[in-house]
Image (cartoon, rainbow, N blue to C red):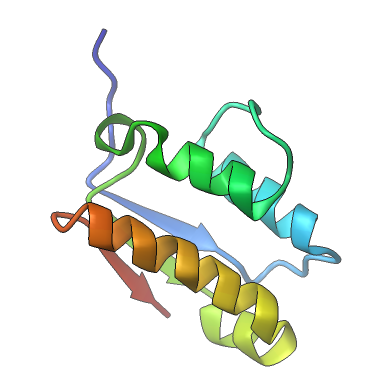
Length: 98
């Protein structure tokens, strides 16, 4: 089975998220992942690492990261940790924070 994977994907974090689980739900929706796991960092990582060659683009742009860092530093750090680990395991992928 073949999947169309875009070369890049822009994730929007600028919409106000009331809770950490809402942010994770938003990320799962923006990536187009199925809802297989709970709304947690563990569940998001399971999606991200499940089949990265098929489900994730080569370039990821994260808009609104600096605002998230100002308003929810711990949540922003968890998100960055997920993407840092992803890049470490997939050196052909990039993440840009805007």
